[in-house]
Length: 352
Image 1: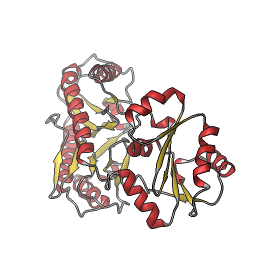
Image 2: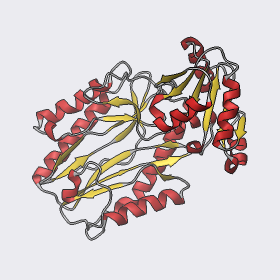
Image 3: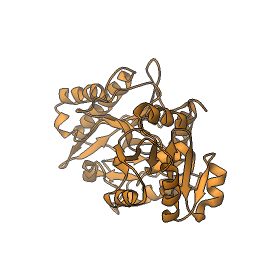
Image 4: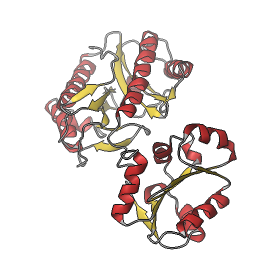
């Protein structure tokens, strides 16, 4: 318990001279309490206690899932109960500035006594390095995604709609007890130049590349993986682009180790693409952390000084997008270890 997320937040409060923290970011609520409907929960953490606030729809669920004491009531009742606890504190209370609307902050100020201090990253910073249990949750989600991808890969054929592939992926994930981690991307032909080309009614044609970006959400944790595959024989230029992206992706994966920054890893992939004359078509960052949220720290980008540390789970996903030709993205899910890395996504990367 002494090194639990809750205990670490309480230690951070003491160090910062804060009496309490009002936690409203859903991922942070779940991280601190285990409550699996965190969008309908809030947590008040003081230096020596914590309370999970939710409403009567979740009375049984909260009791089953969370060891943190609960207060069940409507928002005005919850805020009044929290105000009673805050009134006993001599130090100011803090709120998550990046997870609270202006309107919600106004309500807090009307409801609570004393000073309210904005904070950022106090809880989410703890989530960057995954515990062994969290790592296993992500690993399990990725194994399921690998399995579903293997089942659906033979369906990516001429005459099949992008939507049909997406629906099969999402249906099979749900049958296996998971959910899509995000809206599945299936982008073929010229639509491959759309980095976020969610599935359309376009019919896949012979000679096209098809990009599939998918993830599984299981027990609150997410996976993320992208594969680009060829349908029949593709042009020499598409083959050249594919192999350049694959080279960049594999180089960046091999470079993963503690002590680097997000910029360092982004540079590895970008330099490979520069040698192929394609860096200008790599229009997004190299990757991101993943866990309770699909996109969380660290950020792997040309402007990111975020440190890469053991226990982080990150994506490596370079891409090249040419509107007149199509696009390629290849993405692996990678656990940063004490000495390097472990690739969690095991779906085959095909040669084109």
